[in-house]
Length: 127
Image 1 (spheres, rainbow, N blue to C red):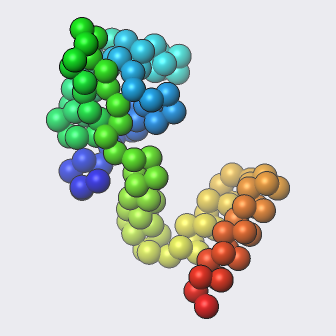
Image 2: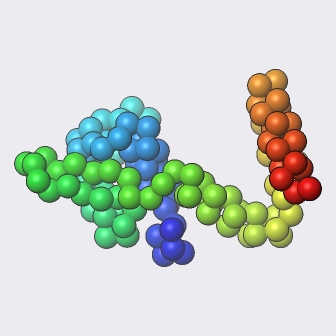
């Protein structure tokens, strides 16, 4: 994901739907968006056309209703967004980022266990 293709909040909402649901028409994406926000169909269409130009999504024009799918991977997008947040807001401090995240929203016991396992794995890889 290049700097110019960093998704906006609205684009991220569409990408989340495509990552979860797979390839969809504009109408299907719009219906899913409409459950959470009041957005006009033409706004959704225009946004997805812009996303195609930015290479965030791919459009399959082989059918009457064009099918869109995410062109960028969810994990890559998450890593780039976290890297930008880490650099811009936390001056590169992973500790500050993690501490802020944990103090902002209480982690479940399962999430804490996953974090412990990741740290154990990370320490094992570092030695």
